[in-house]
Amino acid sequence: MLVLTRKKGQSIIVGDGIEISVVDVNGDSVRIGVRAPREVSIYRREIYEAIREENILAARTASELANQFKKAAPSSEDEEKKD
Image (cartoon, rainbow, N blue to C red; front, side):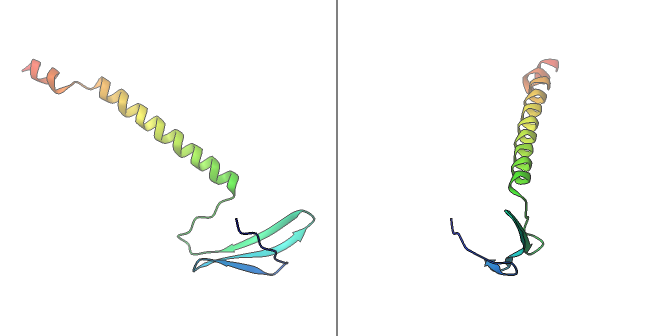
C-alpha cells in the first residue's frame, strides 16, 4: 500500500483520469473529493461490501431457482413416453 501525506487542498492522481483531493480536515475526520470519469464507480468500502454481498446472494438465489425449475420441468424422456 502506498501511503502519502497531503494537506487540505492538495491532490493525488490515480491512473489517467482520477484525482483524489483533500477537501477538509477536522480532527480525525478527513473529507476527500474524487474526480473521475463517469464510467468509474466509486463507493465507500462499507457500501461496496454490502453491494458485493447482495450480488453474491442474488446469484446464489438465481442458481437455486434455476435448479428447482430443472427438477420441476419434465425431462425429454418424459416427453418421449407421452408419445
